[in-house]
Image (cartoon, rainbow, N blue to C red; front, top):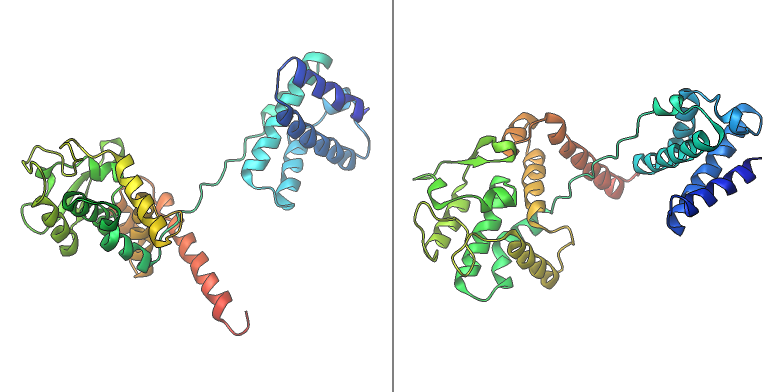
Amino acid sequence: MSDELLTAFCTWLGAERRAGEKTVETYARDIRSFLSFTTEHTGESLDPKGLGTLRAADFRAFLAKAAKTGDVNATRARKLSALRTFFRYLHQRHGVDVTQLSLVTRPRPRNPLPKALSHDDALNVTTGISEATDTAMEQARDAALMMLLYGAGLRIAEALALNVGDLPAVDGALRVTGKGRKQRIVPLLPAVRASIDTWLKLHPNPDRGEPLFTGLRGRRLNAGVAQRNLRNFRRLNGLPEHATPHALRHSFATHLLEGGADLRSIQELLGHASLSTTQRYTEVETNRLMEVWSRTHPRA
């Protein structure tokens, strides 16, 4: 019965729902594995009426088994989506109750761990980015921008939103407006301030109300230009593909953690609303330590 049911479902999916060939193949594979699981789980091959008697715990057991065999959250979320489509079909064609399946929550995909640059690569970007452009103005501007991203942990959008007047009068702290218009105070290291001052000497119009970082025409610098220049630089210098402006922010946090900074301080510097967001950097550090251990320990 299960083969006939699966064939009928795939026909409906392709003909009536107009799903693509790849989608039909994927759903067929997921539903086939589910039907195989229910046979093993209940001890019999279930017809539509029998499938309608399954409880939320049975669906969760299927997803739990998938997790044990290595399925990540995104894969299990896809399988649950296939199940919901399958049971929608069973409800329309066979009157199967879908209440129990609706009680099963979708697995949340894990956010990818932030990828930081090594100390050497981060310094290489901040000191060598000028190689990616031709004019002295662009070179000074890009060096100041990358130094600010790495030295203060700003998002590129936050850095490009700054005006000249946002800079402190003397060495001190910078007030940054982040997501949700939330403001935070970030110290400006002497090296960062020196790089910005070098850029200001070449700034086409360094009045207080003007953008801190500008393009060749004097307008506020577009993030795509900065990303392109860093992309060109990393390819010329053999840096990893994740060497992006945002990776400098990740590097700022990761290197602070390696140096002994506490998570609460890093949270404030990054402007994270939740400490759990900042805690992702501890996973990065743990992974790095495990790699070092496995590579160097004589018993590894």
